[in-house]
Length: 356
Image (cartoon, rainbow, N blue to C red):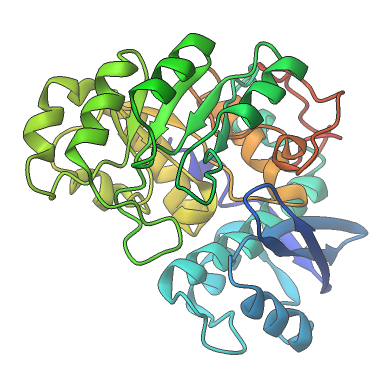
C-alpha cells in the first residue's frame, strides 16, 4: 500500500478556521512573514503554516480572513482534492504557481494534523514507521563587504557556540582560493548550493566555471546542489562529480525528478514545494522505489511548519543533510542553548506536530 493510501481515508470534520500572522527579521536580511492556519473541528485543532515568500501575499490572505467555506464532514483525501480545486488566493499571487503550491500544502498539512488528532493517533503510527534522530545542516550565504569580499567571521562565531554544527553554504564569485581554504579548515561544510536555477530572483547566482571548479575540487566530499548545467562548460566540468550533484529548486513532483538531466543520487524534497499531501507521499515512495536519497529543506518557517518538516525528515530521511536546523540558528543573534544535530525525535502524541 502506498504512503498516501494509509492516510486518505482518515475521517475529517471541520467546523471553522482562523488565521494567525507571524513575522520576524531573519539572518539573511529580510522581514519574514508567514501565516498559521488553524482548522477547528470536533473539539480539536489542526495547524499548518503558509510559507509564501511575498509579504503582500501574506497581507492579502490575512486581510481576507476566513473567507473560504471549508466546513463539513469528509475524509482527508476528499478534503485534499477539494483544496487542490480551490483558488486559495484572494488576490493573484506575486510568484504564480509556486506560491499556489505552498498554500495548498498549508491547508492540507493543517487537515492532516486535524484528522490525526481527531483519530487520536500520531502520523508515524498511522504510517507504521519509527521516527529517527534528524541530522541537520544550517543554510546560509556568507556576508560580503562593500568591496565584494566574503567573510567567514559569522560562521566562525557560530562554530564557537556550536562546534559540531554543519553547514550548507551558497558559493558566490567572491569565494577565492583563500576563502575556500579557510572554509575547508573548519571541516564543517557538508553542502554547496550553487543557486544556479533561481534565475531572476534575489539569490540568482550566474554560473561561473572558475567558481564551480574551485568548489567542486575544494570540497571533494560535499554535496553540490543546483548547478546550472546548461551554462557553457559546466556540465563537462562537473561530469566527474555527478554522484554528488543534488537538486532542490526544480523539484516539485515526480515528473520533475524524471526530467533531470541524469538519474540523481539525492534530491531535496520540500513538503510545501510539492504542494499537496498526495504528491508529497508519491515523491517519497518514488525515491524509495528507485534508490534515490532524499533530504528535507526549510523555508524560513516561523511557526509549526519547521517542526512538521523535521517530523517528516525523522520519518522518511533522518540521516541525510537535512536543511532543517532549528529556527534559532537563523536569528541575527542565535541564542546559546540551541539543540545540536542530530535532533532527538519529538513527535506529538497525536497529530502531525513536532513537540516544543
